[in-house]
Image (cartoon, rainbow, N blue to C red; front, side, top):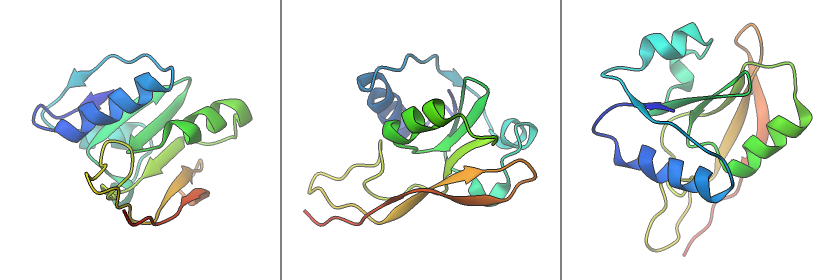
Length: 124
């Protein structure tokens, strides 16, 4: 997983992934743009961290359940993205349990996306 040195939510996302059975190495970089670009992640899909797993890229606060599904189904794709930093996504939890609706997007070869998994809004 690649992150910038000052991002605390990235560490919280890694904790989420580790609790789901994944292992992770963290590499800090001053900027992730060139890394994202070299792995086919467009700027409009950017978030605060980028991870690589089994030939796929994960951009942002992708839920572990979506990663498990990706690795089970093995679609012809670049990877998954949760653009931005949606409230309540893994690593972005709030103390009161609020969660904005967000979508995990499947990044297709060629740069297009489609919804891989919707995640409903919740109010604490």
